[in-house]
Length: 333
Length: 262
Image 1 (cartoon, each protein chain N blue to C red):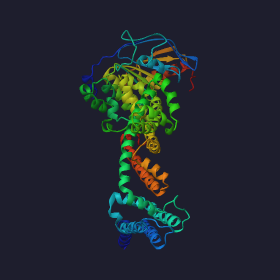
Image 2 (cartoon, chains in turn yellow, orange):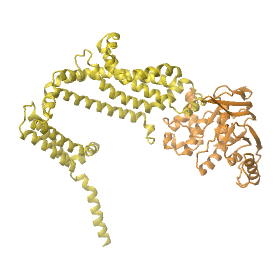
Image 3 (cartoon, helix red, strand yellow):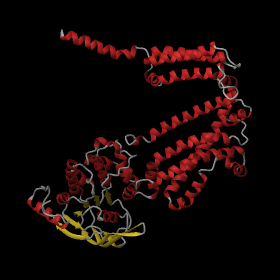
Image 4 (cartoon, helix red, strand yellow):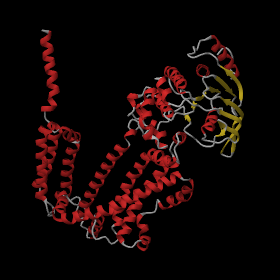
């Protein structure tokens, strides 16, 4: 009899264990609900003013709802990707609610009026109609940002190491860095026009400056804060200055360098708009200004969303790089 | 194991002479004298302990012997030649293991060889010293994954792989728990016997000094001056409750200004 009791208990245990595998992803169902609601609101209620892609937006939301509905039963079979989806489940629910609310406040009630606000279908309309120009802008901005950011952090890093390592370098360099640091990028425009052969070079300089200065300051701080005993140990083991810089000072200050690079990444994005003021023909910053001038705020929002997504993606990449390089830190952090 | 080490290392050691050394630091405009006319001679292969109150300037003496600093007055000599710069023949082991946290145990031990470009020639020594300090299984661990005792053993290995002729130990077991400390003291003794280096140990632990050293030198409070010297002739392994050691301990504590009933 006791065996039978154990058996039923064991069976029940197995069933509860097995339930999540074959079961339903409740948040997925709820997300499907909120997305379907947004689709229904978009399609069912009349627009205050005509927007381009109302039907398309409703269709997109409906497709999204359908995908969540399908995922709510299959997500457990998707392994790691499925677990990521489950982790962000509450976000998907709120995203559907938020899109629905946004839709109602703009297109359906007009409380947030044109041209200052745009309903989601306004942005969608921009992507559908202006995608070619947007892609070109992304490419141009990518080139400018890549050249500026990477040259900036390289020079900032080298300068930071020199400032942190050499007293004489710090004596002359630190005050200059502190003076230059807070100057807004737009204040450099007159000088850069004079100094650089083309506006493109000037733009690169502005992006490089914005990303390089935090890297330089934090690298310098990191190098100068390295535990003196590390140098003593290395010197008694026969290290020369070169070894001390490259094998002790730099690896020891790498956590600080990464903080600087993160800051530089954000600053470099903030400065893109200013940098592309300088006679650029394409680019996301240019696109923002151009459309602001024409009060085409839907285009502005559309470009902003793209910039935010690219920036978030780059931050993610940087985290991966940091975790790989600073794996030795785990447990300290 | 000890025989294997003796066979692979040149068992030479150096003599250390400290001649009338006084040393001062300048900090915020005020001068701080840490050493006052200290003279001592250490024979090759000898194990000497420097005993004194915390912060008395013992560590400064080690830094001078390591060549990290030069004395304000007086001379520090190795085999009769003045010490002017650090050299892997004389290696300092600190109270904190000061392993480089971004390097694995193996890479930490390799530091000295790498810095001198000897990695190819003497790289095989790394595995030998890893075995010697019983860290064979931890070569690819990072310092933060090690216990205090293991970290200190790795620091010892990092010194020993360079075949030092003089090992300078700055309270190397000061931060370990008492059981680990006892074990490490015995291990250090074995290493010293097999490798044959000269050892200069700074400690404020009277028992540790008596258990390990051939000679115990007592330093006064800052500025440090030599106030007593005791020769310990007991053969190893020594028992801490041995009558002669207990008598020596009492005498040393008295020199340090601590009464009998402690």
